[in-house]
Amino acid sequence: MSKVVRGKYTSEAVCGFNHRTAVEEAARCLLCHDAPCSKGCPAGTDPAKFIRSIRFRNIKGAAETIRENNPLGGTCARICPYDRLCEEACSRCGIDRPIEIGKLQRYAIEQEEIFEMNILEAPETVQDEKIACIGAGPASLACSAELAKAGYQVTVFEREEKAGGVLTYGIVPSRLPQEVVEHDIRQIEKLGVKFQFGKEVNVCELSAFDAVFLGIGLWEPKLPEIDGIHLKGVYSALEYLKEARIKKEGFEKGTKVVVVGGGDVAVDCAVTAKLLGAEEVRMVYRRTLEEAPGNMTEFQYALSLGIGITTNMAPSALRGKEHVEFAEFKGRDGLSELKISCDTVIFAIGQRGADMGKAMEADNVFAAGDIVNGGKTAVEAVAEGKAAAADIIKYLDMKGVK
Ligand SMILES: Cc1cc2nc3c(=O)[nH]c(=O)nc-3n(C[C@H](O)[C@H](O)[C@H](O)COP(=O)(O)OP(=O)(O)OC[C@H]3O[C@@H](n4cnc5c(N)ncnc54)[C@H](O)[C@@H]3O)c2cc1C
Ligand code: SF4
Image 1 (cartoon, rainbow, N blue to C red):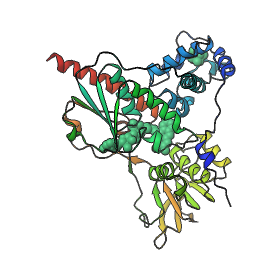
Image 2: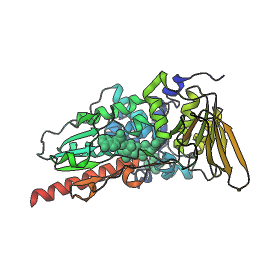
Image 3: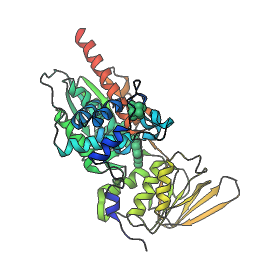
Image 4: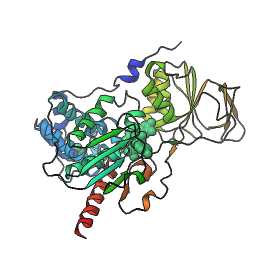
């Protein structure tokens, strides 16, 4: 029988740098004049600049560069796909291996917290205009931080009890500890951003605001129309991950768990079930592993935990009286069939956004993040939230001129 390892679920799996190893790693940097790493960061965090600061032991300078450019600098340091972004662009790739940019960013932000650096503070001049941000995920957090820096009065409305969106209610805490997200959010609060929790709002309720930003993400589940989909024990990915985060010890993680999907979200679900003590966990994906969108390192981690992976099979029906007992699959070849005994089935095959209705027709309503791009990464939501803030400021400036 497998052991419950909530400790492993909540405590961070990857170690960071200490002062000596961080400075040594930064010393490998070639100080490139054209800084391809900085061009590779969608949010403009400017790694070339902060790596240079660490190299010369100016850790506060490094933290300032990160914090001023990316309000979720601590979070992005943990979960960004660097291998596709700044580290892939790094000139040292052509020599030996890229600079470990993510770990250097993590080191600088850890020092910011330890030494209570207080880099961000509310500006002295406050503008008259009030702006509402709906949702407190990465897109809204970035948008609200940029607007607050420019002196606008910003209120973020979030229907859950905490800020962070998917960072707080989705991603496995062993990849992204909650304290890291909360440290980033505290820095945004220092800029004067106000939060109202437990409040689901729509644009029509916010006519008292001069502009509204929508960063509501994708929270409606996508489920296949197959027999048995309404049985007990069947979850969408975010439903399962969120319950795991909220319910702690009372969470029914399942004993024999099947996860349908081949992306990082599917791996997060399988890892969550396994680390919380499920006996058998199997991922089933409709194509080959090479075709799967998930990160290969994450698949390897799942395999190392004893999670099984079956490929080229798509779900055809779920069977059971009230509760799911079997999941049936049909092969990509049109011939093979598979029946797995289970008490929990999690579908990680995508999410969709709530219908925004006519909300976007008003000229003072702006949107960014997953709800607009269809679901990408946290750093892209940050980049788009920053760009939306610039558009809002331009809009308010023009309105002021008329
Ligand atoms: C399981 C999982 C793992 C992921 N792993 C990674 C990763 O490792 N690296 C990475 O870069 N990206 C990852 N992503 C993607 C990343 O988390 C998202 O791209 C990012 O969170 C999108 O930010 P957002 O602000 O657009 O939306 P969200 O994070 O979804 O935030 C939207 C917020 O709006 C709130 N909301 C919605 N409607 C209302 C309303 N009417 N009123 C008030 N509040 C409302 C929601 O409660 C939520 O808090 C992952 C996603 C998932 C699902
Ligand atoms: S691309 Fe790599 S080597 Fe060049 S400045 Fe950036 S981190 Fe340093």
